[in-house]
Image 1 (spheres, rainbow, N blue to C red):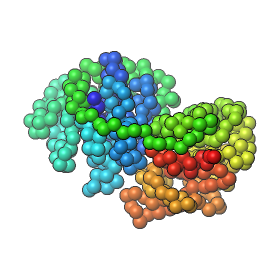
Image 2 (image 1 turned 180 degrees about the vertical axis):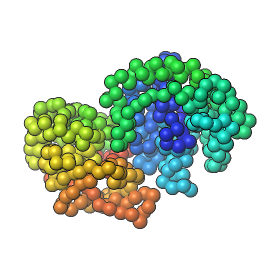
Image 3 (image 1 turned 120 degrees about the horizontal axis):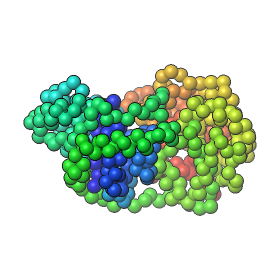
Image 4 (image 1 turned 90 degrees about the vertical axis):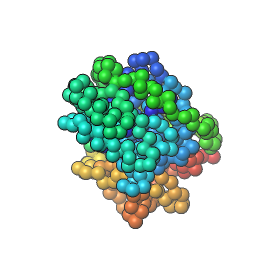
Length: 432
């Protein structure tokens, strides 16, 4: 069984609805496999905390259809996919490429549309009707009505939706049934920084179970057809390779299937904290420093001088290292004047707006091309020649450069999925 929770737009409440649905299903004793549409790193952390198992990204720009099917076949009682942005929003307003709708179509997953009912009744049905008819096959199987004032308000909306669209409503959440989750410049504050998350979710899910029609949702989820079996991609042989992976509050933006791919290749992943560990793990063959919030934790990173010195020395000796976004910032000289590792000849500074946002195609100096995603407020200033040329997916005429290489270290702002691209593993960690 599987279901996709989509929204009429950003801010309609689909993240809250997804988390509460996952929690309510878990309270029924079901094993819930969580997923997130698109390249988001933060929502999957909340999914994992609630479901007790990793959440996987499903991205139609970064992944092929076979990979989507492979990831969705993980054993579970039910898969719950949280959508991204508005249901039809993607690369452009006509093709609907890279939208949640495209993901639902490629995976043949029934969709519950979260509709914000604040201040409306029949007008909510009008909005739902528009979503139902915009694409020839919308895939919308039901409607979850959000932010109603109470049962009477929901009854009006349910009657209107049923009359004008023929779609069933699968329950509601009131204006009071919401999770107050703090946010910062790249989205929500992460799950690992929300210590009281589970008690709050548990209480809210108990209320949601009384207003959501869980049986109806399970019935819709059971309509999803079986997906074809897709074998794991063939990975290069890295048996015996110890990879140090930075993981703490400053660095935790990793696609779960990327980590799985490294393990399938035979790597031993050894996690360490640039904030708290005084020394690198022993006998490492390479390093992986992902994205996160180094700018938020800059003083703590600066204060761990012994780890920074060991890391810089290892990179100078030629250890292979791939650093992504926040990892790039950490390996530079400074972030807003706060001293960092100092291995890469660049300085980073934060700005008050997004510098890059969206899907790109990356071409490196060898001619290797691959899809990626950028999402950052930081600017890197360097005299070194960049090794990447990036082309914006939604505007192919727009290009820029990024990516810095020194010895066996490659660092760039672009976030990359290599779960089914063994050539990128070879590129990032030359071996043998």
